[in-house]
Length: 254
Ligand code: MG
Image 1 (cartoon, rainbow, N blue to C red):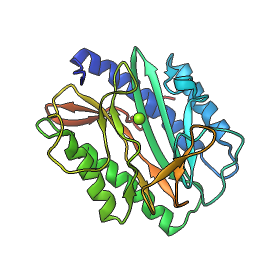
Image 2: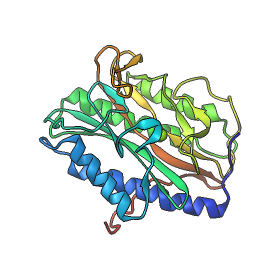
Image 3: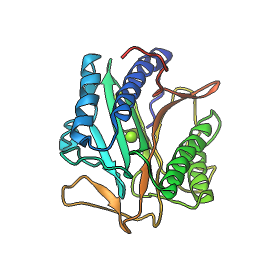
Image 4: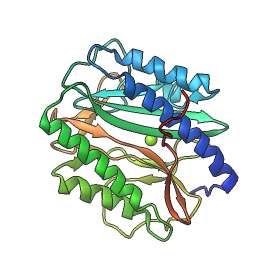
């Protein structure tokens, strides 16, 4: 069942979304060659704790950290640790925060120092695919219009989309109905209505769409070893169109 949020609940979700966005921005601003993913994780956790929130992921099914940090061919759910980022890596960071009883969830992928043209192109395509999906989060559209737009954008750029993981509804629970695949025909699934809140999160692979999970039980990586990127926003469907809840005011106090 898809839970429709009231205006009052949406207001709380804006606050949680902004916190998740701030934590992500804090991490991104610290990305550089030599930094460890554990150090990035601490920055996110501090940011969330200082605001009186809690990390959504820490303890979720036993996940040990605040962020997921996935490097190069890692798709999602990488566990932060003592690995240092190197010039030329691409890093995907996913962070969620709960505040006032609601979750915000967002992810982005960034270059570590200078990266190859191929890596830059994949990064641009991943962000474009996210926004193509967000644009479809309009009342009256069907859920799979989002899925289809994401896949079409990825294909247009020559990339595949991961099929084993999907976006999701979000609210008092981090994962609510509906599941939002990043592929498929348009015009299917429930009709989108104001008050639905969706975490839209395409994962694009340079090569084949297939992925596998490491022995750590978490880290998901491309089967063929190609690069992968992940972008996510928490988006409310409103009368006036999609509203991205996980955005940061540029000059927001940290
Ligand atoms: Mg998510």
